[in-house]
Image (cartoon, rainbow, N blue to C red):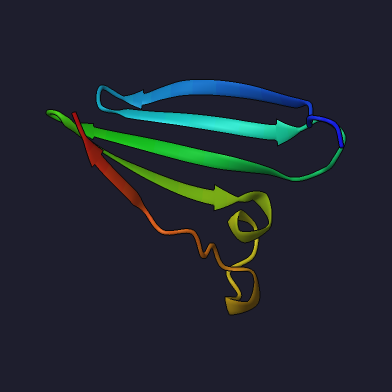
Length: 70
């Protein structure tokens, strides 16, 4: 059991929207996380690299949007 190595980039898409791209260095897949900020609330949506490039039902993103506030 050993920790995975990742590479990541972050881009401020709009004033209230941060996109984080994560890639596993020892694999070919990764994740994209989008943080949408509104006042003291945030919504985090995720999409994996397989779902991002395939519109089929079999590979769709199944993780729910996370919501939180401070």
